Image 1 (cartoon, rainbow, N blue to C red):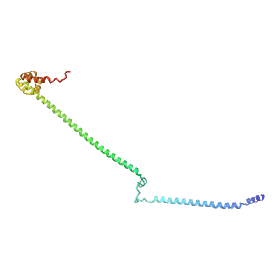
Image 2 (spheres, helix red, strand yellow):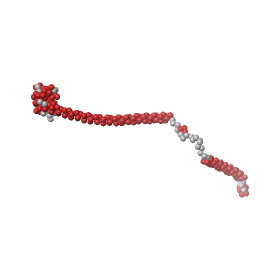
Image 3 (cartoon, rainbow, N blue to C red):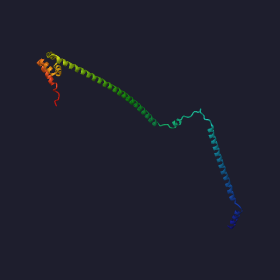
Image 4 (spheres, rainbow, N blue to C red):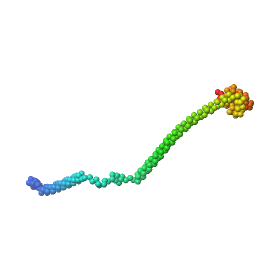
Length: 219
């Protein structure tokens, strides 16, 4: 054992053993291979960067081609946004409903316009009716005044007639008509006319004159 230790000490003192040398020889090629692979990868990356920069520079420096047709803006969206049939049917139903609502709104608007026109026509007719009514009332008032003037004048004529002549005329008149004149005549003139009438006619006229105001309330 002492001899082996000495021999081992000799080998370590004089230099590396053969096993150590083989290990060093094996480690050197591995390191060189790794360095070579790293260099190749770096060169490949630099080459790719150079090619990409050349392409970008070429695209930037190339003049724009105005004649080339551009793809439609909605082409991609039309191809990628295809709606399912249920949604398409729902959208079509909504469109149909909007169309019906628009049609109803147009009909309601037309009816409102027609009603507004009818209201204007009715207002015009009412104004015309009011004007005609006012004119009719004025005409009736004139007719009443004219009739009243005629009756007043006729009563004055009867009062100025002789009692016998007036009695003869009243004898021929209707009792109600003659009672109307006698009721508006002066009492003395009416008494003279009544004295010249027959007893039957005088009695009938007296009954009419007495019952003229019988329906008037006393309280």
